[in-house]
Image 1 (cartoon, rainbow, N blue to C red):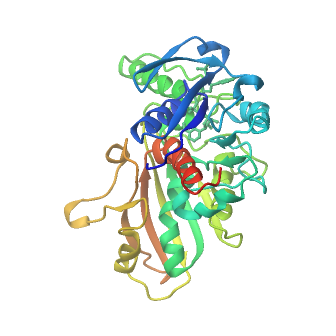
Image 2 (tube, rainbow, N blue to C red; image 1 turned 120 degrees about the horizontal axis):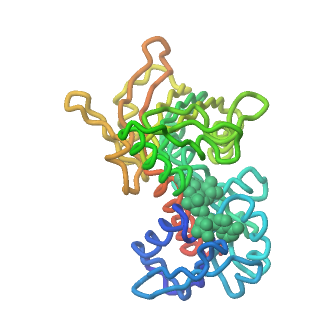
Length: 348
Ligand SMILES: NC(=O)c1ccc[n+]([C@@H]2O[C@H](COP(=O)([O-])OP(=O)(O)OC[C@H]3O[C@@H](n4cnc5c(N)ncnc54)[C@H](OP(=O)(O)O)[C@@H]3O)[C@@H](O)[C@H]2O)c1
């Protein structure tokens, strides 16, 4: 980035799956950092992390941690955001939050820069990063909405275990080993750490991500529904979601059905708007078996779209396969991109 000024940055949850990615992306993109504070719980306080060839000692996050901080990235869970974000804002920082704590708060912009960059400037100290499965879907939907209008979205997800954090990845690894050794698999975390029952994820598929609400949808499904409408400024858009966890480590995949407003469109019309759309790469050629997969999308920045098909019965219906790295565009990269636009546009 070509910005002259440098900023005092803090990362809350720096030792977690998302926090580690935020650090590596800040470094890769050479975000202009004057000072960097790494914060975690008591467990990791004292740990040393290398950043830009310097060793930084992780500190326990506390309300007093934010003096002089300009930008605070939060990814330590919603309760920590609720506990500490006000102290960060009062100290003069802009908080970019990866948790769901404030996503649906009307005073907090919920941003995917390719879709609603200008919402950033409305911030009152906190900007929310959407849910990982929502980010990749709206990035693919935006060019379709802009060109052809959008009436309806029905999505089924195929989500990676890293979406549930580092401990869930360990659980998949251990259970896989146990299964191959013909031992009993120990399920202690997934689908949801705090819920009553746990099921093995290894060699399985769990149709529950986050807890159930009274309407029978999980919180993850409701996040996709509500966040999509907010980010796309489309309260009337009809959205339904089914979210499923699968036993691979990285990248979420989604089967997305859309109904557009315009009649008579073809697959080529979809290719035309998706190909070259900001942050989107079209990988779609059945003749060469070309389509994105969680493995091919891992560690990449873009949202990959393939398998575009016209519905066989509904002239306005189309099916897409959307894949992106949940820790990169789905979390850390989107967060850093928000910070880049914040400073580039002087919206701090
Ligand atoms: N994984 C994803 O794909 C993804 C995507 C988008 C958003 N998110 C959200 O981002 C947040 C973090 O997710 P994650 O996957 O990175 O989780 P994670 O791997 O479990 O990491 C959690 C981080 O939070 C820190 N933490 C825990 N309790 C804390 C406390 N009391 N005070 C300060 N720091 C504390 C941990 O520090 P210790 O090392 O000390 O335990 C660790 O750095 C969650 O809210 C999650 O929903 C995750």
